[in-house]
Amino acid sequence: MVSLPDALLASAQRYTALRRDIHQHPEIGFQEFRTSDLVAERLEGWGYSVTRGLGGTGVVGQLKRGSGARKLGLRADMDALPIQETTGLPYASCHTGLMHACGHDGHTAMLLAAAEHLATGGQFDGTLNLIFQPAEESLGGARKMMEDGLFDRFPCDAIFAMHNLPGFRPGQLLLREGATMASSENVLVHLEGIGGHGAMPHLGADPVVAGASIVMALQTIVSRNVAPLQMAVITVGAFQAGVANNVIPQQATLKLSVRALDRGVRELLRRRIVELVEAQAQSYGVQASVEFLPGYPVLVNTGAETALAREIAMELVGPDNVILQTEALTGSEDFAYMLEAVPGSYLFIGNGDAATGGHGACMVHNPNYDFEDRNIPIGAAFWVRLTERFLAP
Image (cartoon, rainbow, N blue to C red; front, top):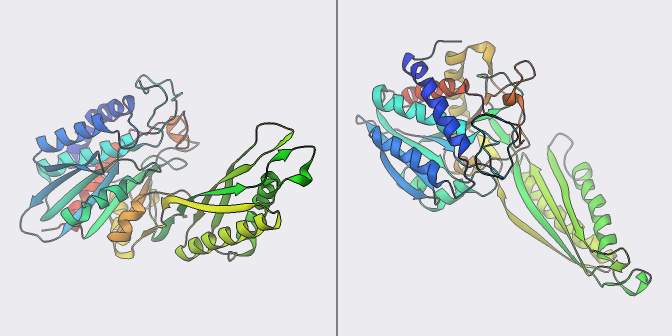
């Protein structure tokens, strides 16, 4: 591994302490008040022009150097999850039912460490926009910041973000050009039947039977409508109906998670779900409606920006610690909204595998997960080198 800047190595202990402080005080989406205060105070102390309130609790720190016209955006997410932590760590969450189970505490610490280094000794010519985003976890904080004028007020020629990834060695960097994370669609299927006595089903129209048929039929969309070399997922995660064994309920609801790695496939899934649900319901004499809740689009990394990120990664950690074209993930990420507006790239840093063990190897969104602190100086060094290369004098 290439040696890291001495200043980042010297600050590693301070930023580990900061990360653990954030971990101990988790805040869910749009309620990151303490975290955004912490971020804003530090950025202001280093000389950044700080804007607060975008997306509710979002923070943007801007630093201009020289007369360069280029503008770079770096983004970190800040929110935690409604999960009860079970790590038993001395800095475990002090808020019941909340924890940083996805490493956003680490992402914030990495970008702050880079922010300090760039403010005190960074060599660049242009505008650096550091974006600390609220509510990434299924609440669309990125889109909310954009609706509040993020890129109108802080235009960027390119934008980058980094997320930790359990299953890979700490410090290993993984990149991918093209579709990298799946779209995420949350779908509600409402079924309206005719309730009645369970002993006289012929007098009703049973939404449970219709729903059961729909659950099975939905699986044919992926197997028979989506091309075999394309990726798609339709999961029925909830089937809610009735309360008694001898009563045919009036209503039933299905809750679906729908994912794709191609925008065309996403539209195909939407169309076929509606067609299939309506046809199946009609065949059972039941009324149906399909409701699409706000979801995330496909996250697509652009070519030139991913090439630059690969170049920086190879220089920083060496070819043995870089995966140049990692596999796409079926998880979703609202940074996809930003990449629809601005070219850029979203990369991953390994958080731990079976060989390293520990809480860092535990998958995200798990009550036993923890961010790997050894990644803080590596992630910060990546942001520093990327900034100085993209905004080279």
